[in-house]
Length: 427
Image (cartoon, rainbow, N blue to C red; front, side, top):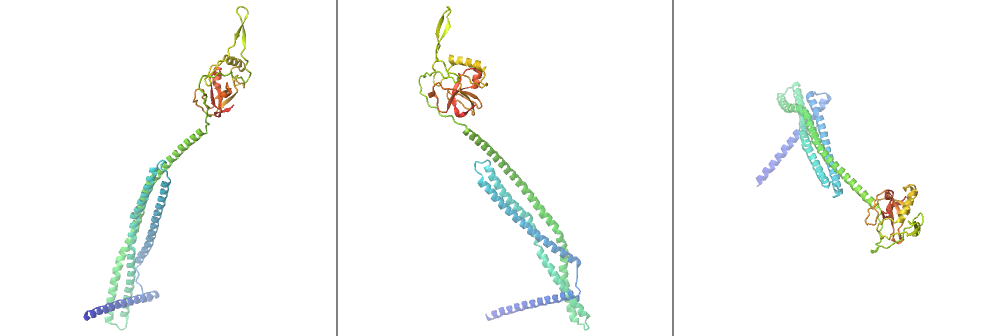
């Protein structure tokens, strides 16, 4: 047990000694390199220069900076695409939420919103696969090359330091062959390490420099193709959404027109209710008075007799008419019409009204008769208003009349009927 502990302690001490030795060697190397760099800057020691390699290193640094900037900007672009996707999704969700079920194209709007969301997801993923991954692989090789370039620079200083040390020993007055041999060995070892690194980098740096064109072409071609396809598909969805919105506008216009029509229909006045008149046999009513003259009472007329004398002929009285039944004009009406016809010359446009007519009205709306005693009118027609035979027969809001066109064509007032007053306007 004690021997095991001693062995472990010995190994630990040995490991510490080895680490200390390596640390001392590294410190010595750093000190030697620092001294060499100072001597070179002071011009007291020459420095090995490789112009071609230095140019390659300058190109490498430029290429690394440009690649890092492209990588940063491309990731910022992807972040913007993701942000735009989220904004688009919120906008589509808002539209779907506001879109009422009875509007045109509700299902199409929901489908367009879903397809738009999937298109954004696919666009973002393809950008990552085709651009970001390739660019990340391209940029991953720069740290290793940069580390080897730095190591090559250190080994070059070691080589110059060994070379200067060898030259100083050879120029000394006392030549110590042992020291010269050791310095020569160190010089060979430093030269070998430096040349291995230098040769590899001289082959690799130009190749890496030329590869930038390929990565730029691949990256931007892939982005252009993915973006073109995305906008093409997005354009189709936008076109479909535009069509749906256009048809929704058409639906709104149709509904608005129908609403306006219903509103106009609502503005047409309703005919006032008519009181239900008692059923039964017609009640006779006296003849209607004429507004132009008073009707003379029935009288006996004298007519010449064939025998040379005169005969008395009683004048017939108007026959009673049912309350709402249209009747033929009485002889009194016919004689009055004939007399008025002689005065007005067969026209009511002279400003004088036919006998028995109170005034004229013009129909403002169409009115369809719903009863046998009603007068059917069309908007714009002129109606001659007649007095009721009995005032108690008149219902509130209703007038009795005959169309002026009938009067002008037939010269009688037989086609009379009642109509709502609020459908007309006095001429």
